[in-house]
Structure formats: C-alpha cells, structure tokens
Length: 336
Image 1 (cartoon, one colour):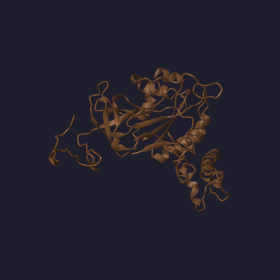
Image 2 (image 1 turned 180 degrees about the horizontal axis):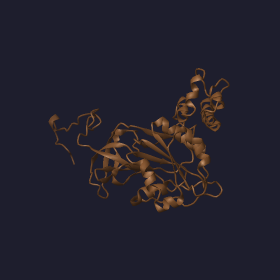
Image 3 (image 1 turned 60 degrees about the horizontal axis):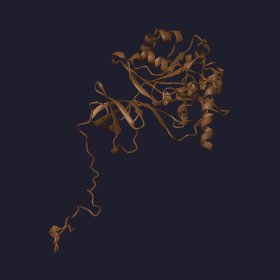
Image 4 (image 1 turned 45 degrees about the vertical axis):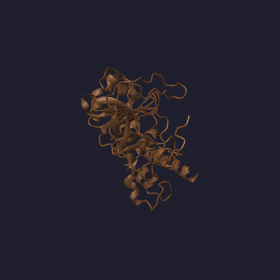
C-alpha cells in the first residue's frame, strides 16, 4: 500500500528536523523550580528513601546527576510523585552542597572511596570492652577519619560488665575525646538511654564499629519505635560479630532533637583518602611536639622531635607507636 499518491510533490513528503530522526538535543537543563527539599534516610539498590515533610518518599536518582552519588544524610531536591504511596517513585534532581563527608576505603591500598554518611557533625565510635576484644588501632583510624572530615568524635564503650574500661580510657583521656561507658544491663533496661541522649541531642551522629560491639542494640534503645535486628553471635574463633545491619539508616531521635545514623559493622577502616600530613590531627596530645621537628619530618625518623616529647612525659608512648603504625602503613602504600 502506497503512503503517497502516484505523483507526490515536496509538500506531500514528511520531513524530520534532523538526519537522526529525533528531537534536537539541547544543553539547557530544567531548573526544577518546583522541587521539594528532602533528607536521605537510606539507600538500597538504587532506591533512595527520603523524608519529605512528615512522610517518607521512595525516589531514584535523575539521569542529569550523572555519576554523582546520593548517600545517607544528603539534603536533596525531589520532583515527581511525593505522596509516599505504595509503588510510587519520585526523582532526585539535585544534591545540595554537603557540610561534611565521612569517608573510608576498604584498606590503605584501595583507591576507591566509600562515603559513609554526609552532613553528620559527630562520630560515635562504638567499641566493646570484651566479646569482641577492643582494637585500639581501629579506634585511632576512626579518629583520623573524624578529624579529617571535621566531625567531633565520641567514644562509646559497651559491655563494661565483662571488662573494666580503665585500661582503654588511660590511652584516650589525654586526647580530651568525650566518652561514655555502658553495660549490657543498662542498655537492656534503658538506664543508659538518657546518658547517651545527652551527648546526641541537636547533633547528626554516625555510629561506627565492628560487628558484635552492641552498636545496633544501642541504637534500638535510643529509637525503640524503629528497632533493627541486632547482632546475636560473636564468632568464637575470630572474635568478630556477624553483619546484621546491611545498609546505613538515619533515624530521628524523639522530639526531633537530632539524628542517629546506624551503619553496617566494619572490619577495616582504610585511610587512603586522608593526606598523611593530616594524620597527626587525630593525635592532639602529640601535635604540639611536632613544632620542633625538622621541615618535612615524616615523624618516623631519627631527627623527629616526638621521641623527646614523649620521653619528657607529655604523651603516652603507646600513642606515638599508634601514630607511626598508621604512617608506616601509608608509606608502604605510596612506595608500591
């Protein structure tokens, strides 16, 4: 069947605006002036749950954002279906500038940065005093990441009914890092809730720690209406817990006085993204001693003034050892 007559002229022929047969492309992008502000609560396999007003909305990242990631804690601009009804999907069209970004890498050789949380202002480093045993090196690495990101660290020691906190606190008291000590009974009864809440009100606090240290149990006492499954078993051979929190989740404290971000348990906290010269910022008890160091001092050489600083009793030798362990790890990576 012919589309045109026997003798068609030019007016009969349908023409397209360009050879490819599609609409001409433009670099002008919509401004989305009708976009509504949202707060990212969690991200799961491309679906992003946001708080918009008093309701939760599931959204996806708009194509114009390209490779820009959206993480828990982000303030975003959303368009589309904002009812929050089942099976509806909105679009995130803009990520607002971040006030802070807490990052980590899988290890010190991994160039790929993982953003843990955005816009937090406090980092709660949760460590069990036993079962599993505390790992001071992990604490130091979290402190480095916190100081580098501009977050205030908070040391939370759990399971004090199994071991005394004093040996660990002796190494961290000189730093002036605020700390809390809780026991299993206090967490289960809720007696520790107000003590912890006093440190969290009016803050966005990210909780980090190994699996099995009681991190999610602590979050459950703070936000009982949003209980998450807790870690019930610590491996008897490795001393490590099993991951039960699989994605970061921001939860509001009651009365709207702050947020807690529960994150999956980590087994390592790489610092590939941190400039080695900034590692000393996590050791405020040692930093004044670097004033007498030679220019470009690596803090692990014969002329380093930190040895004398420690010998004069200004800091614990274990702290200098911890600093040098971190720096040595990074130096080996840079030399590869």
